[in-house]
Length: 285
Image (cartoon, rainbow, N blue to C red; front, side):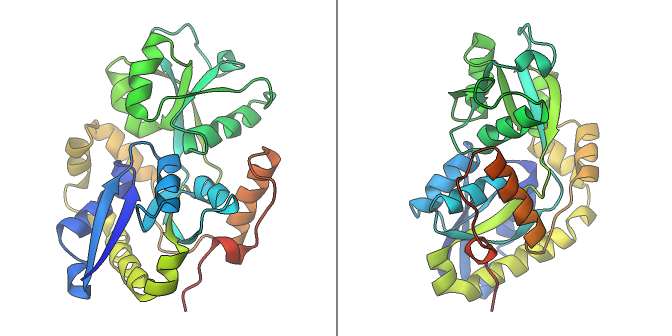
């Protein structure tokens, strides 16, 4: 058996991986794939990839592209979720802020610098025509749990996280949703360390074949909305709305999409230079 570790957020997007792992679908191919949850999101996964704690990750497109440009020796092997990620913009229920406009110049809670919550704060600020130098401030809170504890105490003013993941905390009165900010590109990709691609390309291809078979038929899973509702503490109507909005992919990120992401990161001064496609995307032989 060849051992590989993949990282991802413990959210409903990654349920197909749980199914394939539960069913031991990689074992007949001589592959022992292990899953590692990253509550800190993309920034934490980038660090784990750099430190070789994990071999591959299901990670935000803009986050891994930025980190590859900054020296993370990985490549994207395919898109995992083709649809945009809908980021909810949350404040504590006891907050005086009532709208996105009220948040101009206030402090955004982020899991870490370089994380999705950090990068999307810039995307949202640009969308609102804020001054990126003076209207953005940040407070590192590590993860969703940190925001749940911190925002009601006044440790930061707002927090951006995937809308449906945080919905239970809006329902129970911890957070209040003041707006949304969808990503302008496919949200999740699968990235693999370069050394793994060089030495174990066939095994990575096999892993992708297994998960792609699962995602191709995922929406046909019996009682899927009930399974997601129970596993992730979501209301059935929210799960159904999320399923209608979410599209899995079995294809590579396009050159046009990479260009869009790099141009946006460059415009927001989140990268200093752009990289050619072959530095960012892996093409299987």
